[in-house]
Amino acid sequence: MNVAFFASCLIDQFRPDVGLAAVDVLERCGCTVIFDERQTCCGQPAFNSGHHAEARDVCQRAIHLLHEQVVQQGCEAIVCPSGSCAAMLHHAAGLLQGDDADMAASVASHVHELGSFLVDVLDRTDVEADWSGRVTWHDACHGLRDLGIRDQPRLLLNKVRGLELVEATTCDRCCGFGGTFSVSMPGISLAMADEKLDELEGLGVDAVVSGDVSCLMQLEGRLRDRGSSIRGLHLAEILASRGAGS
Image (cartoon, rainbow, N blue to C red; front, side, top):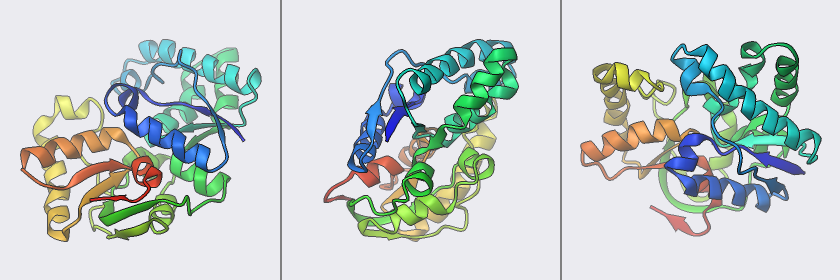
């Protein structure tokens, strides 16, 4: 399968290793990955902040580039290692107008978050990964509530050799990032993160794993402030590992 890879801004700017890991996993599963270096933002930060006109311009460009990859380069799927960006691309038709809205609807039908693509499209739960350690999964809000992604990452993690998956009661609670919410409401944002981390430190896990770098940035920052040894890892980093661990 030819796959267009949409990296997301945060991965591109702050965690490029996550993007490389995601590509490695996709290629291991037999995909030909095509990355268009012209891609930028999907428009989500502006959209979530209420700046819809600005978001429309940015989103329109992303949709045109992705549509080009589907139509001209024969990409059968668009895979993004970010539930929040995948969700934005799914809703782009409601933001754009006319032919652009139709194009966005066509693009959306090809867009998949990484974990759900592996399980639901490729029918793969075992990607031959090895990672020794005890981890817990954080359900990122957009992935869980917008895209309905819950079981897929857990199925993938449970097939990783040497890994022990521990469920936290706070797994589906927001980490407090929420895009610009963490900037406009920092006190509430940190309190939400601490509520989760209090439990995780009691579970004795080596890492908290998620499908969104935005959540990991929020949790990792607070973990460092607290002097915790818990790491923040993206699902792709675990799935790409061979003999790695805590």
